[in-house]
Length: 337
Image (cartoon, rainbow, N blue to C red; front, top):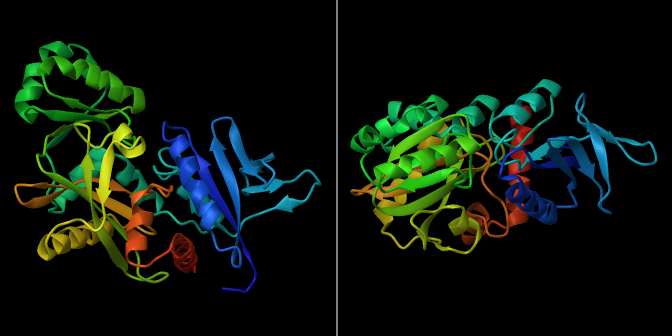
């Protein structure tokens, strides 16, 4: 890489309920990016357009033809790389990555097909099950399930057991996720899930402690390495939006578990990362059910805010936010060569 400062677009926003979380992640990336090597610009991906934000808060439209923008003086600005921080669509589902592939711009997230699979909870669960990973029993449903749902409630309860979870397939941050404890709760749960996604997954309940483990490149373009394991202790019935972002949970890093279980979770996280063909940073969530870590979710564009898990895990092993951001950017550049 040349000694010139590289122009980096840090994408944020998006079209889902995770837009505000995405902006917080992007703000931290901009705050901690190494200014001796990189010149970051926030790029807002909004429904009404894409906009580059300057230091004074002014916004200028981004040309979707080449991902460049023109400032007030008429000067044209392009980018050398993209640090993707759009959680949900169109970032975490692979659409932005596909666009960057088409215009030849290096980006930090996984390739489009990995993101598309990883963003869809039912597809991820089905693929991981096929590859031999322990997962919960699950089924996928479209909106026609709402027709005559009351007649199917008891059958759903018998199939998946109670409690169980109804989850929006294409949503994150636990948006559109409901725990169902009685058959008559399915209707409201499905309706909430369909508000966030066109498809919905019903998933059996796994009783056990909850853990998560981040995976990052060991070196730019190198093999994946696991981070320390975090135990998530939620004050709520599960690790929902409130638990994640309103202080209703405790996160213990490293988790207070024995060496063997730590290794099991870390090795499984790396296996999942490899099996889904992930790049950059990702995070696998687990529930320890009957002594076995079960994969419950894979986050291919994980949060990077001040309270997010991956920065916490990295700092435990001596990797600062600035060092992690540089590693992820260097990895994207190495993959593009």
